[in-house]
Image 1 (tube, rainbow, N blue to C red):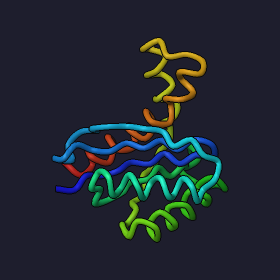
Image 2: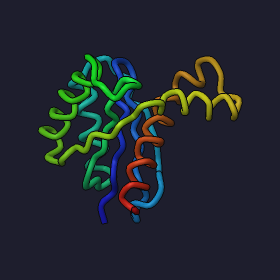
Image 3: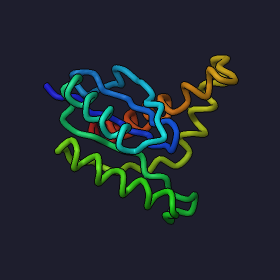
Length: 138
């Protein structure tokens, strides 16, 4: 069986969430700490192999009015590179408010300061993956 990977791409940290074998819930999360897109791509490819990932969903940051700005363009370009490196298609998923939701979740669980900074991207990736898994179930 193949898992689904969720990606919350960022300049310094990229959140990764990987589904369970049944592709019904988020099974694990991690954060790739790198400002180098090529190193981030290498680590994503290694995680794809290690966890037998069969498909990828990546957050697409849209403006609140639904338009796309420079950040969305950057994510589209990175998604194309992920597709090249892994050989897997990358679905783009509207990630509006996922980072805000991630911060709220972490606040509710008393994560503050550096602890929050190192975790928020993984939580955002989990929210992206959860949204996509819910969509697939419908």
